[in-house]
Structure formats: structure tokens, C-alpha cells
Length: 460
Ligand SMILES: Cc1cc2nc3c(=O)[nH]c(=O)nc-3n(C[C@H](O)[C@H](O)[C@H](O)COP(=O)(O)OP(=O)(O)OC[C@H]3O[C@@H](n4cnc5c(N)ncnc54)[C@H](O)[C@@H]3O)c2cc1C
Image 1 (cartoon, helix red, strand yellow):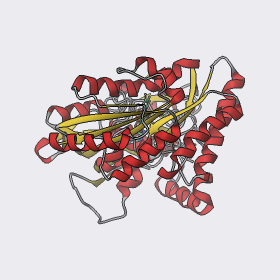
Image 2 (image 1 turned 45 degrees about the horizontal axis):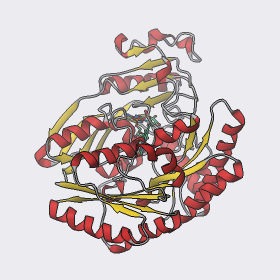
Image 3 (image 1 turned 180 degrees about the vertical axis):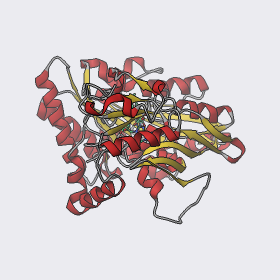
């Protein structure tokens, strides 16, 4: 499989001397692109799917010795093109490294290999009265290793935090092929530098995550969404500010703007008044009495200036609501066939500016613009639409994204609140961190990966 590729002179025979022959797959297209990678297609000399940590280490040792790039791949659901092998070399997939090594429900913890899907961890937790709170939208395909590598969030990150918050230990293979274990089934560990947190969110550029200890929590007894609908974004953002000022802690605070509602509203499982131009979804959770108390307070905070407030309380309605929310991205994509959907995050007091300026950026570049996202975290999916057949429109949508990144930095925010920098946002990090910060970032990369072979070209 190596033969014929950019590093072809080394021959498949050499790599297959360190991993079992059945661990190779042909470099099929599904390992060379990702779900939303804007059509970017990488190349690979070999695709390897190891089933043991020792095999992962052997592959890395081989790549390091022969100076061959190595790109980690989880479920390929990343939204920044991080798993695309843009420098050729070897793609290492984790789908066969998918064992649950230990599950201690009574101690609220689980030890899983990197290739276990997010959905499987969530299900296993749920079946045992527990919850794994990170809920990125493609949970049935994304893997725990990918969630850790991107430090993925989701709607409920507002109350529960992002993936890193739930990782207490990581096993990883780092260059030139060493297995390291940091943390473990521990709730506290301050002994060394926080290497675990360095690996979390490192997008496959510092090490390959092979397994993790995850923290779980008892599942809430009741989940009660409360939805507020408003005539415009100003009234909606004021309602979000009232929710925060009320002092209650919702599990989620999401929003969808007028254009998003226009595209996704038809499938909304409840009544959507004609004059609704901004939606806020909050959720109260916890013990039944506590969830009801919080839901009442949320209703009060959301009611002022609202066109309508409603609070579904049947479990099937709650599931329908979140299914619809998760599907909104696809309804948006369907409008013109292409959408650049970013994930900037800004301080909460700048939410109003982002909602407004996203539309202004769209107007400036003559593309349809909209925004929705995790309002409580100031993490916004500003989105610009294009038709894949219209190259000029696609270029304008791309230019709009660049204006958006500038906006995020001008407002004191970040170019990425959850998807990472990957390949698609390359070049943005230096603007955000400044020269000294970026130099420190680069030196950390060099310390882990002196030959720059791990996912080269990404997170920069
Ligand atoms: C419909 C949809 C909704 C989404 N919603 C959300 C959301 O709400 N919140 C959110 O944060 N994200 C969301 N995402 C993005 C994506 O699902 C997450 O970033 C997810 O964590 C990626 O996991 P993956 O296994 O698919 O990783 P991949 O896409 O395969 O890889 C992502 C990055 O991680 C690296 N990587 C993968 N596995 C490993 C490993 N074992 N060791 C080291 N590096 C590795 C890759 O090299 C790459 O840089 C969504 C995506 C889709 C398609």
C-alpha cells in the first residue's frame, strides 16, 4: 500500500513488518476526506487500522524512523478538516481500538479505548443511571479519541463543560513511538504540568490518544426544556441576559436566528408563530423538584417581550426538540447545497454584535448569512451559504468567513470555540495568539513532535 505513494520507495513490506497485514485498508476515499471538509481531499500512502496500543506505537516508530507524516482519524466528523491527510504519508484510524477496558458505574467512571463512539459511551452510561454529558451533534459516528482531540462541546456544555472536563486520564502514543499515561481513574492530580490538558484539544498534532478514563455523573431525573420566541434578535439577546442574571443554572442556552428559523422551522415539532424571528432553547434538569423549580424561573425570565414561551414536558417531545435542533445544520445545508459554518466564541456581552454583524458580513459579500449556536457559551455558528456549482459564490462565502474571524478577534473572542483550527482555519492562530503566544505554541509542538510529522499543517 505504501508503493506508488509519495513515500513509496519505502515499500509496504517495511510497514507491514510492524503491524499485522489485516490492519491495512486500501486508501479509500472515506479515509482521505471528512464529512464536512469543504471537498478537500488528502492523499495517503497507507491507511492503517490498528487494534492494539502496541501496534499504534509501532506505526509511529516506523513513521518517525522513515520521516513519514502520520494523520490520526477518528469518526471523520470534525468540521475543520483536521483528519484530512494533507501531507500524504500514513493515516491511522482508531475504529478497531474500540474496547471498553473497565466500567465502574458505582464509582461513576469508565475506561475506554479511543475508537469507542461517543454514542456508545452515552448509551452505556444511560443504561446504568449515569450520564456522559458532552453531546457533540454527530455522536453516533464521532469517537472518544476525536472528541478529546477536538475538546468537543455541544448544547449541554453550558452547565457541564466540554469534553476535557470529563477526562481524568489519557493513554497516548507520542513521538517517536512511546506510550505515555497521564492521570487515570483519579478525580484530582496536580503533581506535574497539566500534560493531560495539553493533549486535550491538540487535534492529533502532539500525540495519538489510544484510551481515556472518563468521569460520569448520575443522570438527571428530569429534563425540562423551556423555549422562548421573540420578534427580533435584540429582544432575544436581552432575554438570554435576563436568564443569566436570574441566577438559575440551565443545562443549555441555545439560540437560532430568523434566517435559521426560516430554513429549519418547517420541521419544528411544535407550533411556530409567524412573527417568531429568534428562538432561545433553555433546559432545566436535575432532581424532579429542582428541575421544575428551575423551569418555572426560566419561564419567568424568558416571558418578557416574548411572542410565545412553551415548555414541553413529555420525554418524547423533549427528544423531538433536541433531534430537531441537531438536524438544523442539515436543513441549512440543504438550502443551497453548500454552507461554511464556523464556530467562533465571544464574551457573552458581545453576542448581540455577532448576531447582527454576521448578517452585515453576508450582505457585504452578497451571500445568505445566518447564525445559531450555543448562546450561553458565547459560541456561535455563523454560517454563509453557497451553491457548490457557483465557484464565485463559494469564494464570497469563504471571504465572509475571514471577515468573521476578524470580527471574533476584534470582540475579544476566539476563531474556534469547539471545532478546532484543523486545516480549514490554517493561519488564524497566529493572529489570535500574537507573536509571543504563537511562538510558545510552536515550541510546545516542537517539544512533542520535533520532526513535525504528526498531522503536519494543522492547528497553526
Ligand atoms: C452534524 C454535526 C454536528 C456536530 N456538532 C458538534 C457540536 O455540537 N460540538 C462540537 O464540538 N463538535 C461538533 N461536531 C464536530 C465533530 O463531531 C467533533 O469535533 C468530534 O469531536 C470529532 O470527532 P471524530 O472522532 O469524528 O474526529 P475526526 O473528525 O476523525 O478528527 C478530528 C481531529 O481529531 C484528530 N483525532 C481523531 N482521533 C484522534 C486520536 N485518537 N488521537 C489523536 N488525534 C485524533 C484528527 O487528527 C483531527 O485533527 C459536529 C459535527 C457534525 C458532522
